[in-house]
Image (cartoon, rainbow, N blue to C red; front, side, top):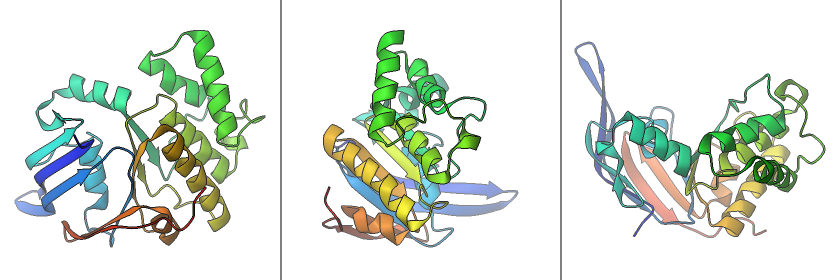
Length: 234
C-alpha cells in the first residue's frame, strides 16, 4: 500500500464570480521512504498540492489518501489528529515560537502528540537536537540562533514525533548554500535511518539534486515525473 495516493485531484479557488483553477486532475502515488521534490514556476500549484497532501486544505474534486485512509472525507477533528500524529511540517519562515527555547519548541510538539512520559520526552528531545547539530544550544531562543540553526530546530520539531510524512515548503529559501547543504544532509540522514518520507516544494536546485524523485508542476498539472539517483550519498 502506498503511503500517499491522489486521484484526479482538482483545486479551484473562487474570487467573487471568477474561478481560478490551481490543480487540474492530479494523479500521484508516493511510497514510504521516498525523498521527493516538487518544482515548477511560481503559481504552478506546488504549495496548493503540498497543502492538500498535508490535510491543511481539501480538494474541490478528487480523493487524497494517506496510508489508505481517505482524508477528504474526514472532519476537522479527524484532520487535526492526522496532522498531529502522522505529518511533520517544515516552513521557509521556520514558524518557531519566539518566547520558547530550542528545546521547548521541539518538546512542545512532542507534548501535543502525547506519546512519551516527561523523562522520555526530555531525553528524546536532547538526543534529536544533538543529531541535527544543536548540542549546547538547547536553551537558546530563536532570536539567538542563526537562520540555519533555526531551520535545524524546525527540522527537529517536525521529526520529534516520528511522523510517517514530512512536508517541507521551500525549506532552504532563507539559507545560504553551505547551510542549505547541511540542513538537507540532516533530513537525508533521518530519511535513511527512520525511513521517513519527505516531500519538498522548492525552487532550489540543491534540494532537487539531493531528491530521489522529481515532480514538475506546470499550470496545475504534473508535467514530469522522474526517479533519479541523489547527487550525494551520506
